Length: 324
Image (cartoon, rainbow, N blue to C red; front, side):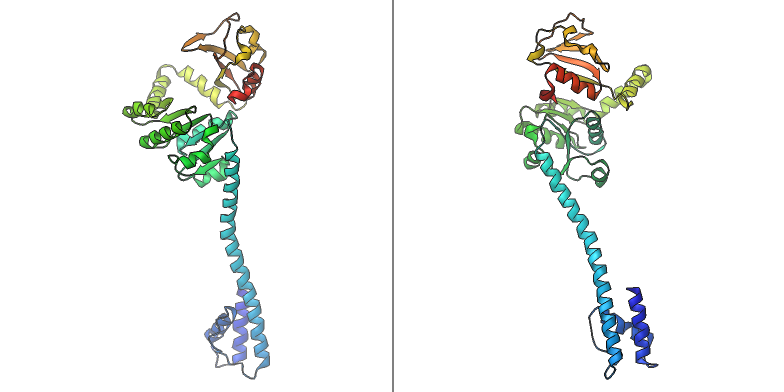
């Protein structure tokens, strides 16, 4: 385009002769390229070579101008189109999810939850009014943009087939409404909500939350633990941050296949990366149970295990599909 403008300006200057200024020649070039055509500043009447030159400049300039405009439009519209198609494809995937978790809120806590679910091989969907672009581009998490208090948005997140939902926005009232809406839509779903003000905890529980977590309370407890039991905190941090072993304290609810068996018969010790810590029986816990302890259906095993071993153990116990 620059070359066409330079050649056109010089050409019209030569065609017009000494009475034609560079500005007139440049103006003549621009109205020719842009097809404005106000009138000939450089008179070409009776000058066939001049008119041939004008046609050449017009075709070259219009071609270059159209190319630039087309590429600019493709860059702007194409990128938006790509995002739209990607979003629709993602929503189709989300609609087919089962046994997943929904995270309402993409703040620091929400993204930490997402990271933990990803590292333990659990499916999840992020829901927020505004999904940060960095989350979409860098992390490739399944996400939906919308108001999580809206039933249609939670419907698109497949709430009826989800295992649990995290209400972790920065507003306690918003978390309360999310909790109430989710409980109404799926009475069986497990709901964990964040609460900044301790005075709001009971209200959110009454709205349907199974558990309410206060970051301020947890933060205070953590600071005390760092002070009086640093070795324990270091051990837990090391366990959580070890990428190779990726150990977690998990729970596995036993099915009818394990009813009446002893701990020894469960063969948990066969798994190198599994350690049984306790068994929950209703509201009671049996810590470090003996090998002769008999378990019942619906008892919950509390084990230290990595995600792969957890899946293998759940298959062995016949509860893989149920709790995945």
